[in-house]
Length: 273
Image (cartoon, rainbow, N blue to C red; front, side):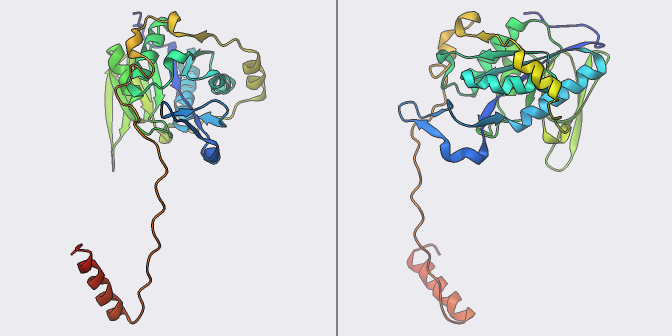
């Protein structure tokens, strides 16, 4: 495994992103009834919003220190669209991990596969993720990759600085923030407070449209097949169903004291109180 140990005047940065369903098109979401997993093919999709903050954070660091930004995603062939947008924003290279063997992966299997791809990329100084994906909201993949690679991690980052081969970050807490410093290479996950993602330029769009994006399959990576996809996912969805609509409520009549008395009576009859 090759990790960069250079003093940071030029950075090799990897950003892991995810293509997620567009929240404005949830009516078109379909579920595979056999595997209880989301069918992503043909669904209008976007880059996970927090991942755009991670891309922007990487681009700002590249502009300050020089270097290269490589973007990786795992998904069906249509996930290439997300990578092309990242290239249009200013990323230098993109890699798509796409193979039926990866389908149905939970956060553990996903982080394992991403970590294997990062090992294949080789030299890097920093790995960025969005703090969580809006479709799963687990916030587990970034930390999972850090564990697989044995790297320090700082999550929920709102500000990041690089100095003397170390990363110093402001980590968001519920009602404050803490400053954490660790050596590079490291993994950080970005919040929306970190920056405002840029719009792709026309020049960037044209460049991204022509870019060659390699597709890595399971056979291209050093993987234990038992740890990938649905077979490597200890957490699995057993059943997906639409909840029954709640019954109609009852409007209590009378004065306020009469309504209160009637409500208390109903609650006692239901043995709630």
